[in-house]
Length: 268
Image (cartoon, rainbow, N blue to C red):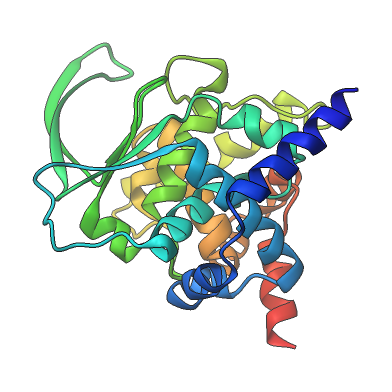
């Protein structure tokens, strides 16, 4: 009965909202990240993105230039970058993972937040933090327009993936701590061990005054380490694999995807 209901709902949605194949082709043409997907994966992603674009609100800040137009292809492109995170999961898991996502709010520019942090010695530090995006447990996913326009390439930067990774992270806590709900085949001790090794290596690079193998924002907090790793996993998998092969392998198990294989397939 449940499966019949699901099929009926899917058929009803498709009848009311026919999939816009031409807009999806345009979305892929605009973003190298989407263009790099194998056709089968791209087809599944397009369908999920179409549902996501209808189920979630995509809003513009009132101060955003009215001349900036988010057409159907642009909306699909944003939704697809979000849904790329869960493409390897079944439909039920995908929808549960994004149950806390209600709105993606696009603001005109990066913004500042006053941050208080307690260091390992018990000293409180206050500073202004400039952000390209922001996410809270049940609040909107906020992304800055300029950074949104810089996302979708194959360079390790993607504000949509970054902020949606925080949402995955928050599914078992009120904050992003770098420890999202794990599937049964991943031992939490393995997750902790691999990410701790990456964290320690990033801190060691900074202590020596050296450039970090991935964006040094990953060294600011464990939650940011996970989110930055997700950005690299999907948009620069070679760089992540070369720097931290154990982390790349762990994320292939978590996301049930292998972006390096996509690159190999698209190259043939």
